[in-house]
Length: 241
Image 1 (cartoon, rainbow, N blue to C red):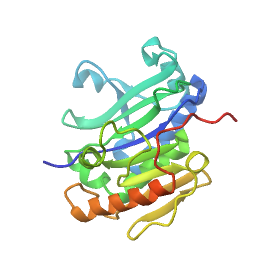
Image 2 (tube, helix red, strand yellow):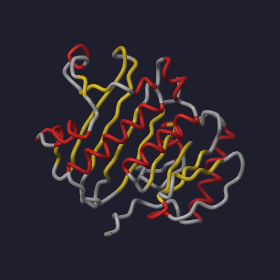
Image 3 (cartoon, rainbow, N blue to C red):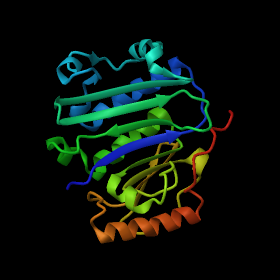
Image 4 (tube, one colour):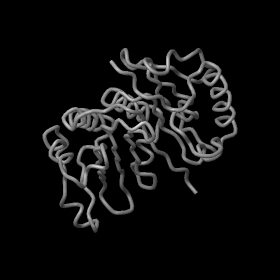
C-alpha cells in the first residue's frame, strides 16, 4: 500500500479577527496555487460530489470574511473552513483551516491533504513542492511549527498522541520567534530561511518514506539533534506583542 502524506502548520493561543484570518487565508491560497496548478480552483463541501462541484469558492479576503461570519463556520472563538479540489471523487486534495482562537488547549491549524492516489501524487509529493507548501503556510499563517510528512512514519515514530512541534518528518518549519535557531544538521539535510520569520528543514531530496531504513535512521538522528537544541516541544501560547 502506498504511503499517504499531509502538510500542516500549527500555532496556539493567538486571537485574531475574522478580517485578519480572511487576509491570511487569501494569501495562503494565492501562494498555494503557485505550488501546483491543480490547487487553483477550490470548492466547498456538499452532500454529494456533483453538488460540491457547483460550489466553487473564490479565495479572496471579502469572501472569506463572509464565510467566517456564518455560524456554521464558527466553533466557539474559532473560524473554520474546509475546501477540496479534484476532477473525480477518488482523486482529490483538501484544505482544512481552524484559526483565530485564543484557546490554549487546542491549536489553530492549516492542513493540506494532497491527492495521495491519483496522477497529482507523483507531481506534488516531491521535496521542492512540499517545501513550497510549508513556505506558503509560514508566510501566510505565521505558525509556530509546520510539517509535511508520511503518516506511516509519524505513526511509527510517535508514541502516543502526535502533539504538534514534538516530532520529525520529511519537511519541517520552525518559527524563529517561538522556536529559535536550527542547529547544523547532517547531510543530506538542507536548511532554508523563510524571510526573517523562521527556518525550513528538508530531510531528504527524494520522497521520504517509512519503508526506507536510511530515511528512518536519518529522521531519528535529526530528532535527537533538534531535541537537544530545544526545538522539539509542545506548542507554546503565542506571546503578547
